[in-house]
Length: 298
Image (cartoon, rainbow, N blue to C red; front, side):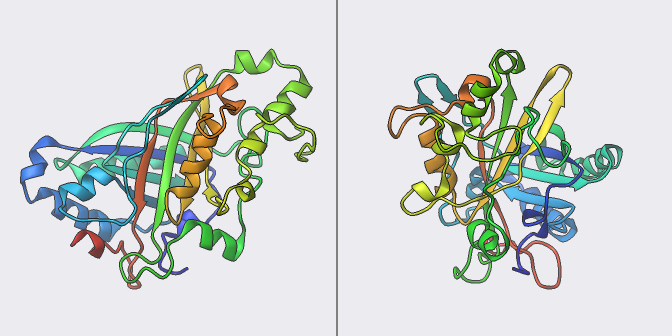
């Protein structure tokens, strides 16, 4: 769809940088907030920079985006899923981390003083798009028109068509725990063979593939994953990013992963844990360029 931010549908880049912001307290009572967003909307191309807007920012503007709400914290037996609300999220996409550093610096200058920097994390494409465990990420991603249907809003009218809802989580991997597993146990955790990425017919019911099988939900829970590995000092993991035509598909999958549906917790929680969780709305583009913020009254 030509109204969508194109970076949503494109393959993950060679490197990326996730830059997130909260609202500066003084901006809540000043005209700086809408004016700053207008500048961002004019400069963001939706390709090299995908922009997401959080529920709190929408509320601060006195606006409403259908179905947008804060990320729900969840707690199951052996699974803790935190909620870390954001006002603004920018996914910077490119081929060189040095270039993205300077883009981040220009972005920060543009958004001050209305927004306060919350967090920055660099990410990268590992080999052919693998998680750092060596397993392929996003194998079941829909393709072509199916990807557009899963990731983008259709039939909602101007200012909404072409938009997307994104879920963002930072997962920290426990490689010591992972490496203690035998090869067969590792495959069972994911529900796929590392050797050839073939899905296992006889994997246990706690295997990640079985917990998140998109067709097993009613209605089916399709979404478009655009996750990338990250590393910082000796910590590492996955920046999980999933786009949908609403937050429903991600939310029902996460509830099942955490064991809130049937008491069975996804094996991923044994070798990794989420430390952040945010929902945002990615506005569509204008045909003449820039982001379409009419839904926010801008």
